[in-house]
Image (tube, rainbow, N blue to C red; front, side, top):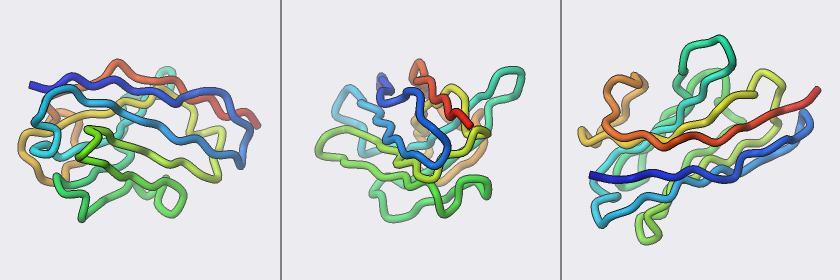
Length: 124
């Protein structure tokens, strides 16, 4: 089992940047594939990015490709999401998630553990 705590959200102007962090408890962080999802008000949770156990492979939603970068530091039990060139449509609650399967997945239902989320608001 792993517990996840996100941080780094906030209010930023369009075109700005934020870096989200997700701190994981336990010694098994490196055994999980990890993902970022987001949920805007009135909308369903959507996939943002995912990364393999080693961090060697990543996959992004088309809406963030080229602007966001997912990474992980297994020695620090931490997942990151660097978000650049932010747009108002990036506004939402951002969640990190862990998947026991260990492979890249964009479906929320395939993830086993979730953090509580951190709010990102991008003003125009």
